Length: 526
Image 1 (spheres, rainbow, N blue to C red):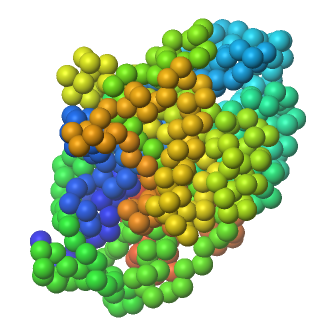
Image 2: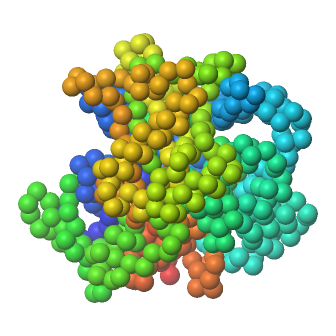
Image 3: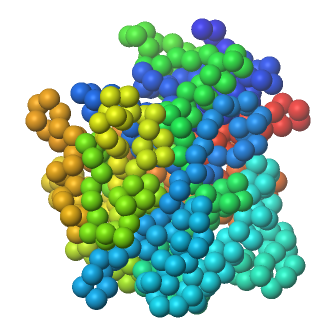
């Protein structure tokens, strides 16, 4: 370890690894400092249940926003698989159980399923028209995510080309998303299906005047101009491992298990004082990249952190290992067909308006909206061969309208109550309780792990459990000061955000890591 590096990166999550790879390839000396004893941060895979050979992505699961350009630039060997089913939403009609199934590979299957729900083709065609707005938006926006920010006015001009483009801009960037949802769609279940992409991870509602729901929706729909969320083969840990390999190949150095004791940000260049193996060290750098949140940086600088009301996290995470897939009450669909996409429960439009109201009053909703993913139906490689042969599967549940404030008073009690409520939400659609399908550890406990927003903040430092670090930002500059910048700048010279707290940060994207690297290289050329 040298006493000075061109670049020191605080945090070896996926964005820090992306930045290190670009900067190392440019010939700069790079050191990554990581508090954990492993690399990858929130994108790592772990043996959550030690008695079983199953490596779960504990906090993140799918990939959509990771640009193909970064994969090509860094020579990453990643396989991202398409899920056969896009989504499955169980419902009851005339005292019978049915399901709305939307396929990623067979549009006609989705059309017929929607026809069964609504009685006509109209809603399916309207849904296609609605999602065309996001595709039009993505065509204009996606490539700019790896460029300097342009003004909102300039972006608006880019949409002033035809009626569809102007409508896409108005519906997604100017007015609350709920207006477009209600204008295009009439069925409550279909409206809710659309709204979930505007809510997951955040505490918001369709007519939120802050438009945070619009920004969240865009982040879920613009990735690589298709918005499709794909399964990384080998789990999210395979993404982190490949990025670590690329960073090491570029010459980056790593130090894990460190504790930052202080940052020097006001001298000739930034410096980091940290503790490792009981010894204190100080490293100087030409540039310092910060891969954690603004809230954590504020603690090290002694500056007050002033969050926005929209920055509060609202997600409840449940990881499960199952001995078998639960059977559905909707007999028309095979369990594997329903579970391999996004399984929605209690996510009707009006029901989520009610659950938002309940959570706003400081209590868990009576009905808890959630969605479940089964990684192993698309990629079984995260399980040992024995488990695969025996029919084991992993499942991950994301609960909505579960804001940090509900758990802050008594996290342990509320976590248990929330877990029971979310499992009950799923069980209403099953022939057998999902608890009966769970694997059992040697000590007799069930293989289930729950994480509240409080737990996520404690584990990862994300402000109030916000999986985006902050509220998602627009893909354009919202102030004159931001125009022409990379969106990674801080108030400190030569100190840049390279993680989700940067503008256009959030999700497993690598975008802030790329943009921070470009900012460093741009500064060196100036």
